[in-house]
Length: 321
Length: 251
Image (cartoon, rainbow over all chains, first blue to last red; front, top):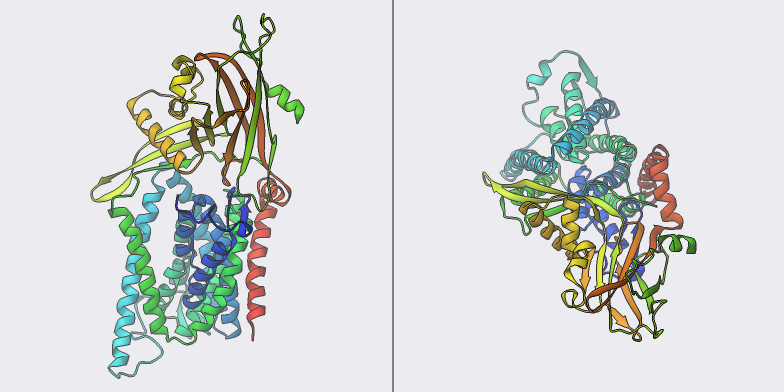
């Protein structure tokens, strides 16, 4: 089996007590670092990249999903802090998002168990990835390319996006978010939070890749606080999900998570620094391409004939100390 | 631990005239530590003559078949088929109490050294183990069983080695099992069968355990017994690591 375990230098191997296998430390820190870099750059958690990578490397799926939440929490904390120092977080807005997404996450965990019992969780996850990532990626890419084209054509663009008002601004219960220079109804904010929490728990991702475009296109949050606010929301989301995993599935591998964290936090710092050299529309175009690539990857697994039509899974973890 | 071995030792099924077998394992406790990369366990044994044997010597030639069985798990094998252009799992077979690790080590080709009835009775072949775990002898169970065996062989958790038992003398033998690094933790049983002219003349079981030790054991036990504490520790570790990286990289 062409997996990175077993064949690497012996000093670098580390045994993962919950996953019950040994892996190369530098491989783990490397993929953690690479994904952490993207996390800091784009303000997304990176779980949607890291979880499939680990599963492909031979880590059991529940352990991969649960442990990645720890890595995403750490990388996002490091990224969020550097945005906080730059004043790039709307704490008021983040609080509303965190509260509603926590409720959404609990609902998501419930639906997750139902789907697993029905036996079609894998198919559902792959389809959701394709539809969700495909839609979000396509939307972002068109918008970003249009902005880039206009800039090239010499049209002066304001920092704010066009069409400042949409139907959401007509809703009741308006609240003023000073940092974001927004005076909008609280309902779409809570709605977005609920949806992100739900989908995040269901797909085992932080939801940053949906939250960033939702904040930009639906709420019109200015670019300078979007990523920081999104990162803070991801930190809170992931801490809640990590607790839920530790309590329910008991498949969080703290050693695996720590190896990923070490690489991830360092990568996130470099990512956040690199983000300063790119304009918002360039960042959005790059993130859109990344999101579309992952959607395509999942789409291909659904459409192309698998290398091995057979697969196996352990139903009861025969774990003993 | 010696006591446990004695308990596990199964007395030989006594036909009229039968050899006796003494055997042991090199490592009754395989400990997993942070640098665990798999382990090898050697099995030794010696065939003794029947107590009432007139000559007082064990006369061969003998052949040995050893099965090593790890802790059992419930497994499911699934098959993907294409419907409406999308590949999805459409059929599955559940295997209850299938060994997480299973190795057959023999001193020769199984078909030549042992009678088929005995091989059948002990479900020696991996396919027979799968049929047993499927609890069904339908064509579907057989098909999924074959695939399960193939996939577990590819992962190194299932093997048949018909050249794995070496005779040190006419009656003393040695064999070796290699446990991969992702071996399941728990009790293992090595069941040794001695054949003479394809007839089972002696058998014996030895046990060994694979378990985590030290830090790995503590982590595992905390995760299972104190999930709240463990979860809090994970959250704290994540936030602290992220915060520390932020401080370190602060210019």
